[in-house]
Length: 321
Image (cartoon, rainbow, N blue to C red; front, side, top):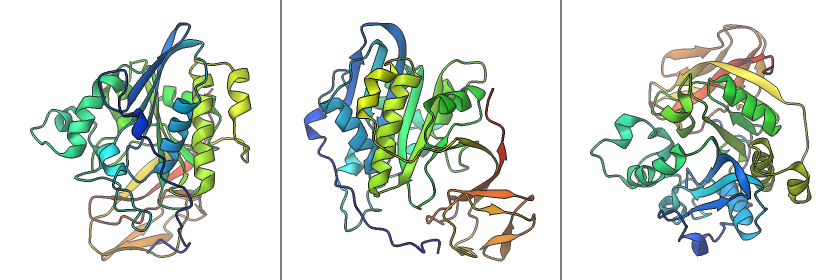
């Protein structure tokens, strides 16, 4: 098991019920028009029902809005049905109800005949998300790995993550074998297209610092996307530890193949393994080893069922120009 640190629920579940009726014809979707024309930024929370920090940040902005100078801002709460079942005594149980909503962002999944709770909600949200010029999907993590941004494989994703300036780690990867993430969905993954989506993993699911990172990234997204000037967001920014950004390119995602996957040691993430061929886990009878020297371990998971991503590995690269 990769669970050496005790996990407690230090965040309170926010009450978002007053914001059910939005202004876009879809529950929990709110669009705010700026004074002048400009890009459309969408910020999403609750892709997973037990990830409270993004919902806290989005709710605070709805309750205490910042004037949008240019463009449009849309704020969304995705898997509210799962979120409504959140119980701090069983905090992992409300990640989803029928299936992981962040594995459904493909034409095949969205147009299938399946009528799961998550697919039905994704179908309602897809036209809203497709409008975005920039999209930030606010998440959190099981482990105490440092906060990071997943920016996909496109240079425009790396640049948007750089422009946010937070979190201090930016990871470029291709996603999961088990399904397509929102940031990898067609409008955002088109090599020649202009649309950009990034996923912020703000920290451990229920740590107080994670909510502060989510607030920070949401506010900086307004600036980076051109909707608000720095002077408008600065009074609202939490005090967090700032560090220079580092960029990692994922080369391998380790997918669980057996029912007996186990890490050799407790890993939080961002450990650098100096030597190629170092064993880090066993997947049944198969050893999992580092593919090269100075290999960076990223986002080790506790969900070690077949088909799930156990861990990503990558190497440090130069930031985008």
